[in-house]
Image (cartoon, rainbow, N blue to C red; front, top):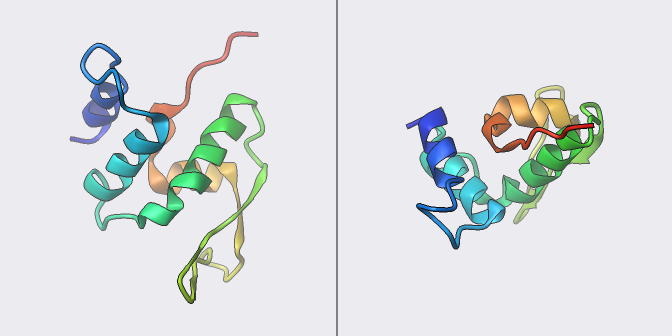
Length: 99
């Protein structure tokens, strides 16, 4: 699976009706071990867009899942887009932007 899965899931000929949200969700639940909670999809998409904008250090707020607050290793609830991309392995979803 891994990067091949991410590349294939974005192939619009193979999967014409899959949204970025669906693809990231499938990646987090089926391509990561241990699976990453589906509630992280929105943060991952924000991080992807931040990367596409060249804003690698944009601060993003981690979600609350029920009564549980997702936290960074240092206990904070805010992380950079770079941290999200690296820790969730969503770099394959980042579209190269030509300037």
